[in-house]
Amino acid sequence: MTTLVLTSDECESLLDHRQVMAALERAHAALTTGAAEQPRPATMRPATADAADPHGPALLPMAATWLGLAVVKMLSDIPRNRELGLPAQRSTVALYDAETAECLALIDGRTLTRIRTASATALATRLLARPGSRVLGLIGAGALALEHVRSHQCLGYDEVVVWSRSDRTAQVLAEIAPADVSVTIAETPGQVVANADVVCTLTPSVDPILTAAELRPGLHINAVGSPPRPHFRELAADVLARANLVVVDALDVALHESGNIAAGAVDAAALVELGDIVTGAHPGRRDGREVTVFNSVGIGLQDLAAAELARSRARSAGVGREFDLRG
Image (cartoon, rainbow, N blue to C red):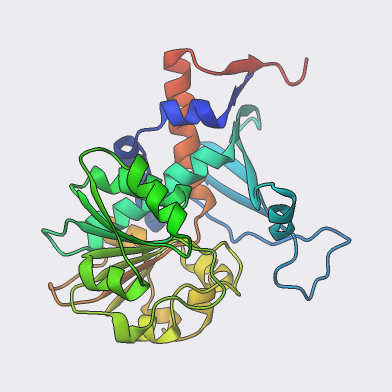
């Protein structure tokens, strides 16, 4: 059997947010019903790294199984790469037949991760935001921000309020956003919260950006930017304490990898998995005044769902290259 190899650019052409959202919805339902398996990843460090340095280089193999498939994504988080003009994060996704261990696909993880992350956020927004919401707030204006504009446009969000530490990145986002989406640049994160129905935090921040004092009734927050390291926090502890509902992508992963959750402001027993909302095991938002939070660190099962969708569409479209890795 040959292995399909896909680049990031090819993933860009193959993955549609509506289809990815549907695949992720099925995947999270499978996790809730036990049809999918999502083990907690174990962080590894290079032998030369200082184990006491929370900002040091780390490698995170993320795995999952579902639909007779297995996935392993090797995610590297190397903060010093920024000083070299290199990406701080890199990843490669390997998709396998779970029965035979044949490698079905090797996919560069940059675009796949960005699209599946924004699609998962949009899925959470669809399930948890107040009906009639249409103003999207973004804290952070990098590549992940543009992808969130695109994924939420599928839900009818045609107004965006954005804040960034860099005025230039916010301006670039306003320039490259879809033509039928209006973008307003805010002067502070609080101004984003005051004007949006849904707020997405998209920064690798160590110190919290949002506090409970800035929240207002009915707000939905997607905390998405933090890498899977417990010392990164975008939300102050009082935000989770104030929230009526806190949803995570996978409970065990969130408890060990999310800095927002590790702060301990919400009892683990009160956390709800996204799959519970998908399947109706939990009712989700109960009224228009509740504050809801989706706290996501990203899981291998999401990579599996997106990778299988990309592989299926690539085969149909004749995209990518086939290699006999054992030849």
